[in-house]
Image 1: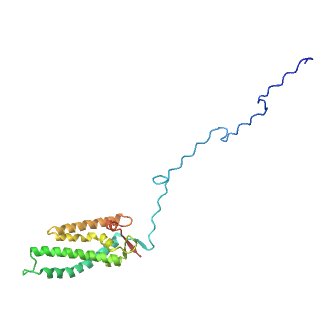
Image 2: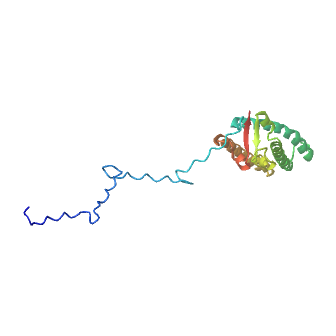
Image 3: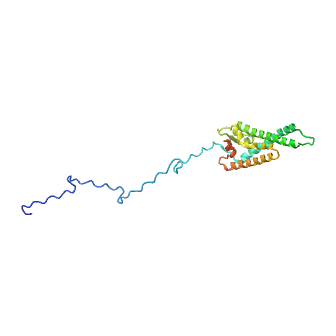
Length: 226
């Protein structure tokens, strides 16, 4: 450089008057690709109706040594009771009907006497059946047939059924009362009882708790002990 020539000016500071460079950009947390991962799926809905709702708790297990009464046991219990009540009906109904109406000289009833005898038999049979099952099940929880088969009727409160519950679960046994209707009453009552028995058998077979429509109507449960 020759004498008398001024030096060149210093280069201009690219970071302004402060002279401090800006901080470096933060490091990409997602790596060199720089693409964030997709967001997680929303939580499944919860509460009633949501597929994420917790399942209801299972029903409590039956008490040890007790389970619902099966169809065969209940059929045999009814058969025992039916035989017992048949004998009771013979002992009670025959003397009552004969003593009330009398027998004509031909050894039989007249037309009017036959209708009257049928009506009396229908009423007394209904009373005997409902009284037997209602009183035995409400006081002991068992009839004679159920005692033999180790069955027990349980009411809605957990103990023996009330008299109302016992009668409600056996209300179909009152269908013979239709015999008070001349000529067709007994036939209708017999067919209605047959339909009721079939529905009870189907209900016991198909229901997990072995509760046919009679037990559901009365709020009762027949259980097997032992």
